[in-house]
Length: 277
Image (cartoon, rainbow, N blue to C red; front, side, top):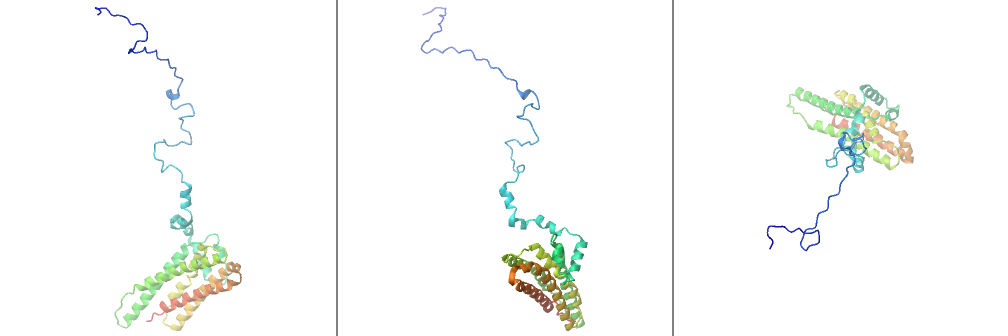
C-alpha cells in the first residue's frame, strides 16, 4: 500500500492501459475561391447558359421532349386553335375578290389564285349567311301567308336547324369525301383548298334565296336551276385540271361533283323555295 506518493508509470505496454494518443497531423488549407464573390474559377460561376439548382422542380424550365413534340403533331393538331388561325388571316378585299370569282364559273382559275393562301373565313360566313337568309326569308314569307289568310302563325325552329345541318354538313362532308377519293387515286389535293372551293361555291345561292320570294313556281325552279348549274360548273371546272391525273376515271369524278351540286340545288328548291303567300 502506498502512502501519499504516486508511482509514475513508464511508457510501456501494460495490460488494460490506454495507449498514448499521438499528436494530430497538421493540415494546410489551399487557397479557396470561397473568399471572393463571385468566384474567379469556372466552377460555381453563373454563366450565360445558367441552370436552376439541382434540387428544384424543373417542370416548367426544361425543354419539351421528343415525345411531347410528336404528341403535338399529326391528328393532335386538329384540336388546336393555332392550327386554324392562318386560314382566317385574310382581309375583306380578298374575300370579295374570291366571291366575285365564284360568280364567273367558266373562268376556272379560282384554285390557281387560292392555291398559296386558301381560307376558311369566307366559307364559314357564306354558310352562316345562307342559314340566316334561308331561315329569315322562309319565316317572313310564311308569316305573311298566314296573316293574309287570317290564320294563326307559329314560328318553325326546324327551319334553322335543317338549314344549318344542310349547309354546314354539305360544305364539310362532301369536300372530305372528295379528298379521300382523290387520295385513293393519288391525285394531289389539299383538304383546306377543297373546303375553300366548296364554301365559295355556295355564295350564288344567297341571291337565289332572296329571289325565291317571288310567288311564281316556274320562276323559282328557274332560279334554283341557274344557281345549281353555276355552282356545279364552278366546282367542276376548277377541279378538272387536278383530277385529270386520276386517269380514265377523271370524267366520273367530275360528273359526280357536278351532280352533287345539282342535287343540293334541288334540295333547296324542294324545302326552301316552296313557301307561298
